[in-house]
Length: 260
Length: 340
Image (cartoon, rainbow over all chains, first blue to last red; front, side, top):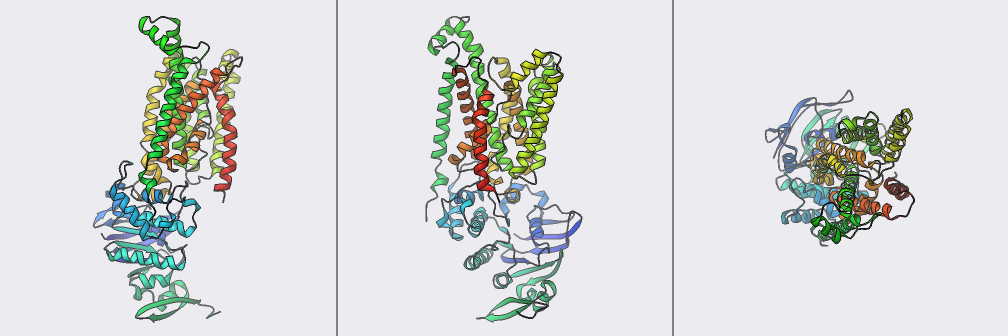
């Protein structure tokens, strides 16, 4: 399923957060939303998820406008993974993952399909060893993976994730990015807010670069993560290279001091 | 891969529900037998089938049965409301008594008493309680909407309780008839004594509607644990859920308080004790909490009848005496668990 955003304007307490965003997110791609702090990435993701009031514009899924969809139908098509990993009660890991099946489970009767989806999600995210533990006892990174499993368990065609790797160790950052790319390869539309430019370069196929609520660049990853864009938007000098045919980027210094 | 038995296996929950139902049935029968006159159920039932006017059958049908039914209805309302409110504001300290819903319901009922509306129009009594409760829950919701810290919740409760208590005191103060004031004063302490079937019928409709409203949210409440955004993205209509719980609590607690007076802490203790047995899922907690509330209040009511005090101890006094230390314990415990 593809998502279209047209002419999106968002104002929060008098401040323009998103200014005329137009975009089309096709299926089968891992798409990164990048940009400096306060650029409006998370707000855009919330807009796409139908969680944010918009002053102007609209979002549609396969041509169908979000407002015309019932919440529960939208929930089956699209999963939103929030940045916050809060769980207000000390539920066990598997119960939290099972909450991802909520759009499909009308009564509290859990079927085989639901169990299978939960098992697969737990396996994919590598949290089998956490089964039976309370989510509130886990570390931030472990909890983030539980929430990712919860999102995958829904099994929807669109996955929107707000900084899903921010609290993870390097190994799990790589694993989660590979997992998201894998989901995209299977035909899903995966949109991820990211700060880790090196991982964006390695795993995302498309990027959208936001600055001050405006879209400033969009396209293939290598065309967006350029020396001039990083300097202009992030104010950093970056090193670029190539490892076995795969390009990499490393933000190195800010504009004032060349190096330490 | 470790098994996901805890998901499939509802054995623990079913066992808990069945145990609570059995306890409720046993206490129900005991409650019919115990009091100033000890009745033998079988003899009395025999008497009833033969002759309707024997003293025993009058005690059983007109005094004990309505009192027992009220304990079940009111206890279930308090247990259910506590669990539903806690799920909604995601805070284990939300309870009709602590957050001032009971006090303001009592104020509503006192105003009805004070102006003599209840004699003209019996339904005015539960309605007064419901309006009072509704105002308190809406106020609480408005305050905790963007900040559900324990501090906000408890301060909101203190504010609502103090204001309602002050207005109630004002009504008592201005009362032209000191006996009426005394009567209201004792009523406020909470009791199920000397109630009749009239009271049962009076609160039954709104109580049942309130239960239905709260229970209808039980699937969505679990998801609400993950925060508003996530819950919404999983298909929960948050505004509708909140409205249902607010209205449900107001209808059932308002009606309960208007008949029994203030009975606190049932909605605090019961959900807290039962929560681990339902995997801490707020939605699954609802039915168990309703049953547990009925069991606890019925047991408390039997206890006040058995205690050999010169004047029967008010049930609200008993629940407060037992509940307040429990509340303190919870605050101390939560402080460790939830404090930043």
